[in-house]
Length: 405
Image 1 (cartoon, rainbow, N blue to C red):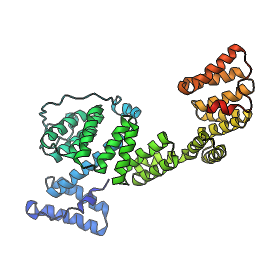
Image 2: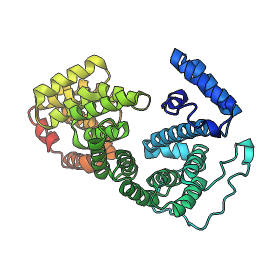
Image 3: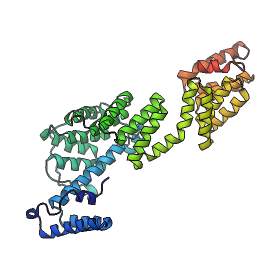
Image 4: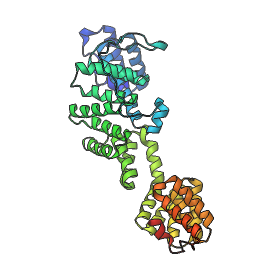
């Protein structure tokens, strides 16, 4: 966020001398002198003092409002990038589509003191005032009233993209994804596809689990603004989770972290740590066993407990007909991630190969409980063989066929 003193530089201190008191002009000149000397702390202090002394000064008030909007915009954009699980923790319940609200003619007392001694809202009905009040209400945890304020302003300013942009956030925070979706399209249209509105829509689509649309909107936003951190993060996550393009994903996340380290630095570090393990898994699926082992080794150099890397090694050893090595690696994988269904499968195959059908059945059953769509058929096949008294289904050379099919 740009600091208040940085915003001061954009407003000439004495630009409107007839509209302000001489003391206010002197205060702004003092701020400019501090900036010229490079004394940022003094400039910040002088700005806050001037704001307390001259709260109605047009220059100082404009800077304060810009700061308020920017601050709340960043906070709400960060909230939008949370997962649905985290939203329950933050707001008490999941976001659910279709929970639209009855929009009537709101009659809001903007100057009324709120419980707890909170500062009153700013009076007025203009778009800027509504934006400041709306963001302030969202920051206080009252998105419903924020929507009321913004809806009232939209009725008088129907062509204001920023108002729709803000109401997307208010509706999203109150659970009305359907209304947020409608507002998002309107904001994009009114702003003539400003990258910020397309980036916001991308975040909304990700929250609604419309991942393909989220990716498309993020990609469009980045064509207009290659440095949009939110769009970079969403595109990176999609490329990672949905496309398996870990190299491209890591580059996007790296750029997002560079632009906004406070929000995306940790995400990039986690992805960087998992990169080789995930690429090893991807190469395993393509039958590139040698390259998969190389990536798994690199992953284990940085994290000896990387569950994916151990699982990949176990899978390759299974294909090579080495059940003992497979059991060792998959057991290490399960110590790091007890819900690794793939590790359970490959260990089960190795145990069956060695004639330990009871233990193999136990692993297959756990894998089927974790991911029935992929692994129930393996469990049922082995359970039937147990009933029939059939010989081992997999030999030292047959594990790869069973696992890949």
